Image 1 (cartoon, one colour):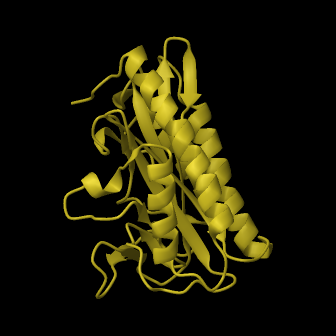
Image 2 (image 1 turned 180 degrees about the vertical axis):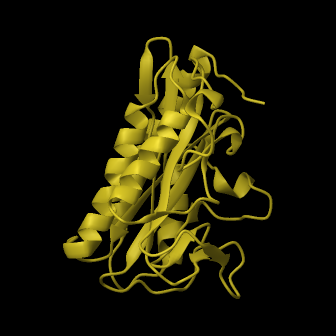
Length: 250
């Protein structure tokens, strides 16, 4: 069941989203070679408290952290650890915020300690473009399938692979709500959800260089990796639909 938000609820989510956006910016600046992913987690916890908000992800049963911090072939849900980041690692910072009863969520993949270049730059540019084009397809009266199709088209066009078993999602009082936001079109457009005001989505582009197949990482609870060990990335924003337009909250 989809929980459509009131204008007042979206206003609260917008305030939370602004806070989360700033926290993510500060975390990206904090990252450097030689630090552990646990150090990023500790900084995230500190920044969330500074914003007088709460951690979002620890409200998921069994998860106790503010962030998921996948590196290289790790795709999503990787808990912080004593893993030391190296120059050139591909790091995803996935973080949520719980503010005045509502969650917001966002993620970005970055290169640790150096400029993006060559194939890595092309890979990350593809994810950013896919997210941008997907969000442009969100409009009242449109179909959610257009969002999925946009992601799939751009990822495939660049010869990369959507991780089909992982999706974006509705978001609000719960971190994960209906509907799923697939990264590929799984049915005719007109059989997908018609977009209405009050819909709030966490749109995610989750993809890899070499495969759409994923497996759970050995000896690492939660963490999911590419089956072939190829690099993976994720870009995510929370987006709200209102009668006055579509707003990116994070």
